[in-house]
View 1 (cartoon, rainbow, N blue to C red):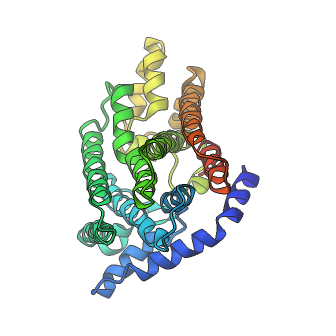
View 2: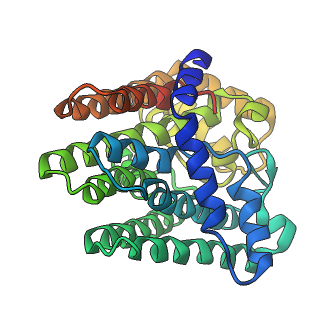
Length: 326
């Protein structure tokens, strides 16, 4: 895992530097305090995966312009805006190992900082003068909001189905990955077959990434994860490992699981007992297999492109999506 991450980071070092510079150069609100709040999470150790995907995909489509890094930050601003809002909705205390923004500056400020980043994303998209790109960003924003609302409606609902779960993570996570990859094809005026391939790659990568994220909440220690283990469950979020275990457990074990799930103040011992049941009923392995399936589909989608260093990095990123530690 560490070797894979090192190889990816080495290969994209210059691209990440360009993305960081663009993130700073394009933030520039008229009210300095907005920068302070946004920068708290924007520069707190994010992987920059979404803008990096756009840069690499644009290069693979033979984009010859000089604005890939600038346009790519649309997707980081969108991502960070959703994190600010999600932390408020979930009343989360930490993000990426640091206090959540709303715990430092208040809920109203965090909401408005997120709104600013959403607006700035659309403002940068308008500079492309390409309605396909502007429409894609608008569609992503709508989908992410609806995905969050769907998740709120199903908070603590033990009847949540796997189909509903997949729809939520598609809207909340996969559409942003998909959009970052698809926009690169628009930017490069690539043929439709390449646009579809990149959209498929981004979709499957996003699904795999979120499934792995949901899995880490049960198998990773809190220091590595950057948040308290079991946080999803405490917030009433039922994810794929729990959904699968509830569907396969015996009535008695299912009853125990429901008691833990419906008590947001469950103890560490209860949480570890639940994790044991997830392993016992194959829910951990099932989630890994689902995530692996999406990774394979993502890698297959890239086969319409000729071999290149960019394609090689994108294939490695797909592997990283399920092998990462946090």
